Image 1 (cartoon, rainbow, N blue to C red):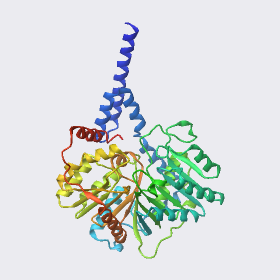
Image 2 (image 1 turned 30 degrees about the horizontal axis):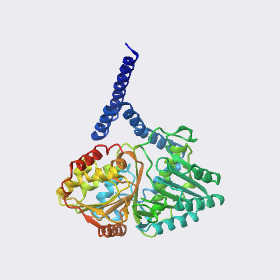
Image 3 (image 1 turned 180 degrees about the vertical axis):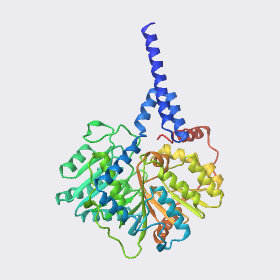
Image 4 (image 1 turned 135 degrees about the vertical axis):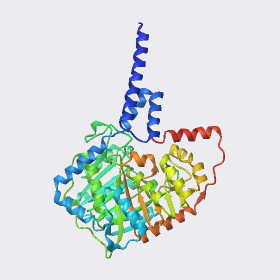
Length: 489
């Protein structure tokens, strides 16, 4: 056998081995069938590259880490654990004193069972900033400026532009005053952040940590996974005030400098017992990134409750480390239980087969389904994949609108005008299965009415889509390709 023939045999054997290894792992850790088929197709087309990408982009063992952390936290401070969960049960779906209408009680029970049986809390204060980026930004800066003990900041994207530097300078100022400032950033989302910028913050006393960096020489816990990203956006100040929603830190979120124009975001400022959950999620993410345990009384002061019942709020974290696909399951169950209307605003609409069928079935039942998406997108593949569903969904009676002008970046869902969800999760398979997200569920009538009014106002700047006209062969191939690989990107 010549050397060339030997190399050919070794190459073929390597390819076959890699394909078998990849297929074994896909079958051993089952997931959505279309995602499994997409991975296997990639293995067959590019055996070595496909398998390497699979191991970079998948991490089925993350659930064990979260369960291990939960057990550790209970053992570490059982008294605090009990106090926190008693406080979070101030409102109980089973408590008749709240006189919830039957329709709302149904949704409360649904979300509570999906959310590890953690019920919503009452006595919260909620301020909604919809398409008021400047107002929410100044409210955040004011809250940080008033911090006395700690500031916990967690974002997917943080730019070192004018906006980012304004917050950074404020964090440096608070650190000099003795306030503990911690900044947790997703490594892939904030990859453009200059190393010198982070070093400047660290030198000034601000603790900067990257979530799941894929490189081992960054001086912290690392994971060789590039596809599981922390997409959460939240700030917790002194354990008393939380900010959350869809807005990242960057100039494009505050002005029209971005090619897609000013972004439309929905932000929340929350006070009261619900802040405990945001703090708990930050502490878990910080622990997974650094090994440092922040779970102690200083980070959980007595909540500032409002008079009367206040706003009923439920905070739902989700991600690939949970045993169930929480956001996916919650949305499907909510849409299936809807009786009158479903309103969804999302920048990225890429449903899987189950979600698409659930929406279509609800429309056939007579539920009015309205989905609002941007007319232009910064993720072209996601836009194409979403458009591949438009025809069949419009045929079923689903109303789809494309927002014109400003780039719609809000992530909002409103069910029967009884309850609403605001958070970081998009309406796509990445948010359902791959990203770490956080969502706030609002049950109070005033908050839901305000969000419904904002949604209706956005529809006035949108165009309804009739049944899409027949496309060229090239367009059909483009949309089909985008849909095929939607479970991966």
